[in-house]
Every structure is written in structure tokens, then in C-alpha cells.
Image (tube, rainbow, N blue to C red; front, side, top):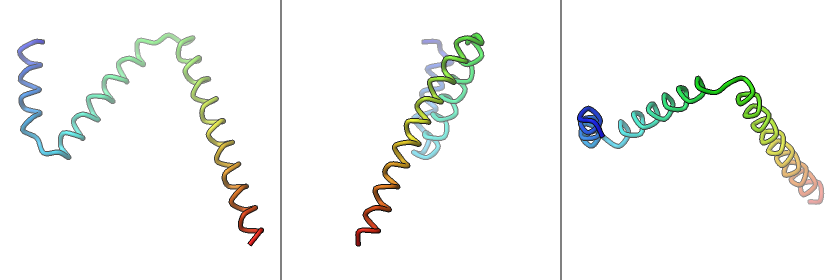
Length: 76
């Protein structure tokens, strides 16, 4: 690890808990943003399709839970 990396980690240790979370979140955001810039269009399309499938499955599961709740309410 470089000297600046070690200095950054030492500074990080002096932050409060909430500041550490903010800094960590920003580092993760920047890291992911730089990784997205490295992806080509085909890779991005595949990721979007995967996320869309996951979102659809979660939405369907949510509707099923909602429907079960409504049926339970009607049964009362």
C-alpha cells in the first residue's frame, strides 16, 4: 500500500462512527462508478437485464404477500 493510502487509513481511524460510514459510502460509490465506466455496452445491457429480472421477481413476491394479506383481512 502506498504512503498516501496508509495516511488515508490513519485519518479514517480518527473519524467518528457516522463520518466513517459517510466516507466509506463515498469510497464505495466512487469505486463502483469507476467500474461502471470500464464496462462496455454489452456488459451494461446484461447487468440491466439481470437487475430488471431481480426487480420483477421482487415485485411479484411483494404482490403475492399483499394478496395474502388482503385474503387474511377478508377472512376476519
